[in-house]
Structures are given as C-alpha cells and as structure tokens.
Amino acid sequence: MSSQIVAVVDDDPGMLDSLVRLLGAWGFEPAAYGSAEAFWEDHVFSKAICVLLDVNLPGMSGIELRRRLRDAKSPLPVIFMTAESNEPTRNAATAAGCVAYLHKPFAAEALFEALKKAAASRPADRWLSTA
Image (cartoon, rainbow, N blue to C red; front, side, top):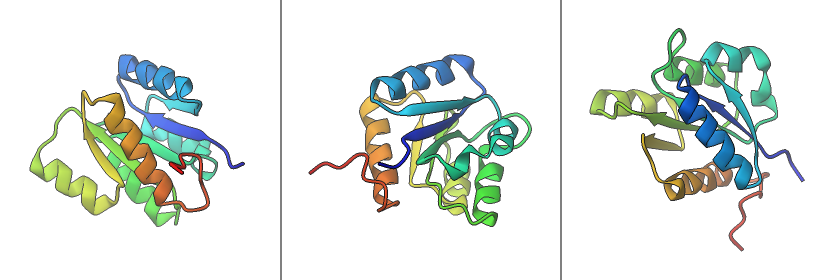
C-alpha cells in the first residue's frame, strides 16, 4: 500500500491543528508545516499523496510554492485553501494548478471530496477507493 501522508501547510496554528486532528481521525498521516519554506525544505512532497496548501502565507505564498512544485516536475496534487476567496486569487490558484479550491471555513465533507479528487488525479494511489 502506498503512503498516506497528507501534507498540510498553513500559518494559522489553530487551522493547522484542526486539519491534523481531522486527517488523523480519517486514518491519514498528516505532516504539518507552518510555512511554505518549511514544507519545501522537508522534501515530504516526494512521499505525500497530496498537500493542503494555504494560498496566503508569509514569505513564499502557496501559489509560489505550487509553481516551484510544478517546475520541479512534482506530480503532487494541491488542494488550495484560503480565507480570502476572490476572483483574482481563485484565478491565480487555478492557473498555478490545483485539484480543488476551498474557502475557509469549509466543511469536512468538502475536504473529503477534495481528497478524493486528489486521489483520482493520482491513479496509483487507491487510498480513497469508493468501490
């Protein structure tokens, strides 16, 4: 079975903690990062099945991190999350490449659906099979 690491990158400690607890309850192995730089330096993206990525981070933004992943030819699916959902941000996130775009606060069900979409974008990972 492939790894079930889900990386979470958010500078809000409360949001980070909530997502880590939720993902853990669902049986995933969450890897939490308070910045894009910390995530990038850890190289967990080579082992993770997807990353939940805040758009607005201090330092390197989530969109900048997504571009770096793309430039590095990483197949890691990205689920963007943001508290500031506006058209320019949504367009930038979509252009950078994401499987889902969630507006905070979002329902657990919306996150689970986004995780299923991420799984579908990586056919070798069947960790959320609905069959």
